[in-house]
Length: 549
Ligand code: ADP
Image (cartoon, rainbow, N blue to C red):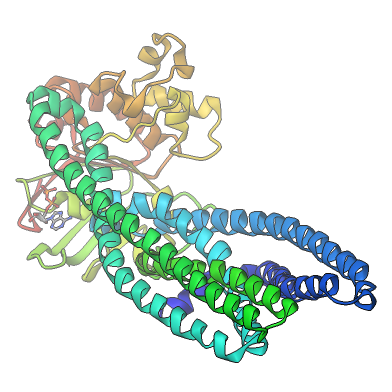
């Protein structure tokens, strides 16, 4: 199963990879020819004067083959680099693009660190595996197989030792390989957990400091890191034992053969040419055999990566962007008997019906868990209704491309999503290609223009990681400007103004009201002062509207 998936991943590069493999095969053939030529050369020197005539053409042939091998090596290295880098870049882009396209609910069910590890370290290993290991497999087998056949031709009795020694070697590798594989998977998941903890720590730093729980956090990390250290150490120990043991096994086998060859040479059963060739074929055999053993280990590691990559890439993404710009909607929003439940949870919305006229300012209120955020997530198309319909200007949003739908709606979310970029870029983020004038206009509506001009470099001021260099209220105003920069027909403030004090929120809404005319505004709030400013208040309880005033 993973084999088919691997083939599908490598398919676009099959030509380059095939050429690389052919070069490597040619290299193997050259390597296989050398021991034979060297044997002939040795024999030529030892034989009678008539035999000496063969020496110089043989030397020329050997030198020619060596030059050819060097040339093939250079070609293979260049092709390897070109293919490996191309495959790696494409895999990285494909995974990144797919992660971007996967729906939010899918992401909510994932462990971030594990995705990070997959997108960085693991995918890199996979790229090198495809080019560096898979492609080298056939040439390795050719060299190993060719050398074995040559040994048989030279001396069948002695060569019989080789198939006895090689499978023994493989059984050893397999046994150890299984243990290494289990360890590898444990290390991978500990590594992912460690990445997640670092990320969370950076994310939660203000909270950690305010509760003064830094020591507990450090201990939590230390426990995990210790597990990672012990697992990695165990892996290193296995390698420390196995690798020299295998090397030793190969060398001992070579010595055994060497002694056997020496005796045959001594008794005259084997000529000089055969002896030289035989020894060189054995030397030729050692490297591919140990490389084939390490391929086995690599396959075990890559299998886990492939399975996880396949699971991600085969999860259905959201429909692609339509590419065109939709005409601006009027902004009429209707929920028609909408029912929705999160997986393995009771219903969050139970036949929710509401209609909001274009240009209306509506407050959505109700106790925690009433379903307000869920209703917003459905309206944004992040989640799909189980039953019922949601209409924007009489069009069912289920039939709209997600990017069209989301261009009509400006969302100021509960959590802030500012980047480490200039104020201007943070506002323009809401719409690709927004001009300076559009950014400024949006900032004016959001009552942010004045304070932005007061910043050291105005609109070009960098606002630091996640906007930490701004006050909460300022961050919210920038988030509001970002939502407005695309001139959406519907604006949603999802408890967005929670950073303000009561008057602050009402003041912002009051100040913005005029500028917001001409678009539908949905404010999720508990604040009475804000409720008072709305044209209408919808009260949600237990997944349905209980009051509409
Ligand atoms: P509100 O925004 O009014 O506080 P929500 O829409 O967040 O309410 O929640 C409605 C119900 O759905 C609650 O019972 C809540 O526990 C549940 N819920 C919200 N988000 C999720 C989620 N991602 N997964 C599972 N259940 C959720």
